View 1 (cartoon, helix red, strand yellow):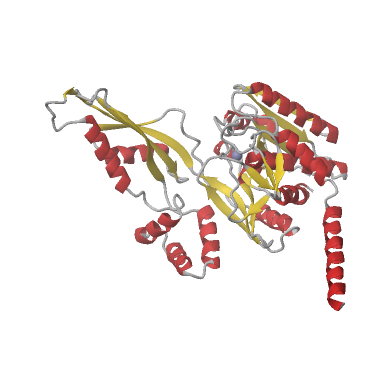
View 2 (view 1 turned 90 degrees about the horizontal axis):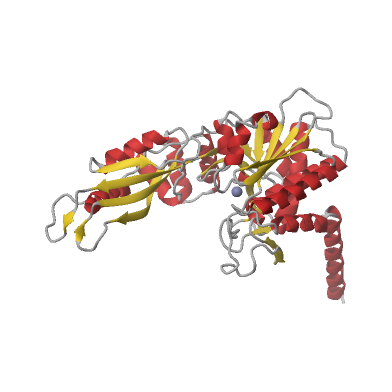
Length: 462
Ligand SMILES: [Zn+2]
């Protein structure tokens, strides 16, 4: 009897609890519907008409909310959307830029379990190409601004939205925004939803939220060995394929000098604090002397790319006939260059490794801008922590450095500081499939980002 009563009480409690959660998010269905519409527009490189559909939808959504200053730029086969919510009570402070990208990586029906551009919900996840990268963040910014407008929020500085259409490819939108359209987007700093956000354990405890402040520079190099060739029945010591393979072997053995900055130090410090085991000890040793090569090499083996510039051979071709000495052999070497190191310095080091028989040249157009880390601003970091704490009390917010590049690089290179920010969260250890198959975003994490964005904007622009 008693047992059944308590079971019933538990059932009642569960019912009350789920009602309370539902009451908290009355617009969950509407938020999901808008997100679905945005995901289902296949804004892949080259499909200009799809970008037009998306910018038309977004423009209508901004206008509906009362944000009527919306500019759509046609450029480079894509579009960039810039919207401005002017300060209601101007404080004289420069605007804040809210960033996301509209384009997504190509996805083929035949590769995916389900059609990539058909929005689906499954097991608490929202699925579709771009759901994670970066349409969740984009939709989060849009809905947060709509709600802030609706509840009568009066910003004390302009809020500018920058949604680009080619982040995954050329970055032309961000580059043009930072230069030729500068007057439309000039801001004290940017908050980039493409590079922030959190990870939460399955039991609901937050692991951390990330604030991106630095990005490695991307650059490709071509290694070319040329030779006069000849008949393969009469081999000589000089041989283009051997020359190239010796150069690649030298590269394989080479380790660039270890480096550290505010972004990587912050991440490693948190690791050292949390890991009470051997790895934690190693990290502590590394932090005590980041220039110690032996320790840094061990860290690097565990966390590739985090302690230095890395270059790796990614493509190879050579020779012209099975029975001829090769006249040419070529390799592509891809480098992810630590902030503060120039692309040309890396080329010179590669040339020294390759020796005189192999020419090393930077691949034109391959590189992203060389940028220094954005200095950590305590006010932005504190606001981020406080905004996240409205949902996850005491969650750490940790500065970090991306191994890849985002639109943020183009702004940083042109003097606008950028912080990766987001209230969006995923589950620790769960695959999200950005750029890959069956891309998805955790539904609760998607909805939670909206109040976190709202709280953040009230703090920095209220
Ligand atoms: Zn992205």
